[in-house]
Length: 161
Image 1: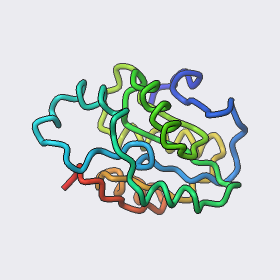
Image 2: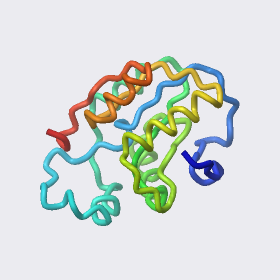
Image 3: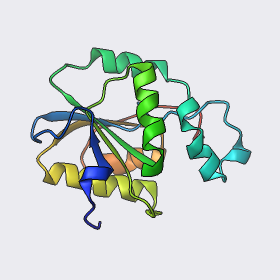
C-alpha cells in the first residue's frame, strides 16, 4: 500500500492521538446501508456515496458502542471515499455515535475494499494499535479480518446477501 497523507485520510475526532492502547475497529458502525436499498442503485456508486448521510442507524451497533469500555479507542475504517467525509462526520454527530478515528479511502483508490481495509489494518498495527475486534457487513471483509488474526463479528446490514 502506498504511503498516504494521514492528515487528510486519517481524521481524529479530537486531534491526533498516540497509538498503542487497545482499539475496537469497526466499519459497520458508520457505514450501514439501507436494508431497503434497491439493487439498481448498487452500480451507481456516486449516488450511493452522495446519499450516505441519509442512512439509518443499525440499532445493534448503536447499543454496542454504548456498552464498550470507555478506555477503548473506536476506529471507523470504511471503504467510502474521502470526498464524503463531511457527510459521514455529520451523520456520526447527528446520531451521537462514539468514534475516535475515521479512516477513509484516498481519492482515486479503486482497489477492492477488502484490500484497502487490509492495508489500513496493517498500518494501524504498524503504528502500535492493538486491534481487539472488528465488525463488518461485508463477508469478504469479515474473511480478511479473520485471515489477519483479528476476531470479526459479521453484522447483517441488508446490503450483502
